[in-house]
Image 1 (cartoon, one colour):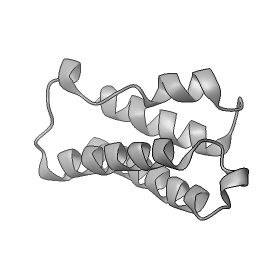
Image 2 (cartoon, rainbow, N blue to C red):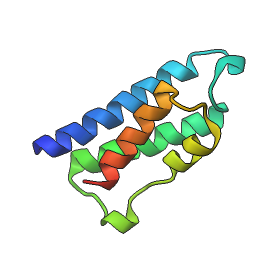
Image 3 (cartoon, helix red, strand yellow):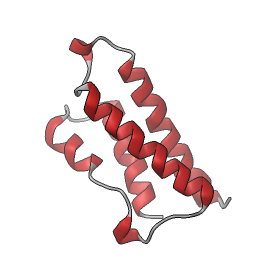
Length: 94
């Protein structure tokens, strides 16, 4: 695995861990509903699997859209949102 793959994988795993921590909170304390957080977690796990396998789709076929949801509806500067956006951007730029 190249250093760049390792860096992208690290960001994805940090975002996955952040989502797990967020999901451990009570519903009233979540930044988004559970189904959105679970969908993001699933998407990030798939991204991690693609990176680990080296079987990544072309850039125009890669999973994206989490950043749009976060920017549109989450509090600005929310740490988990920043982790997810950073992971998604790293993946799309890889």
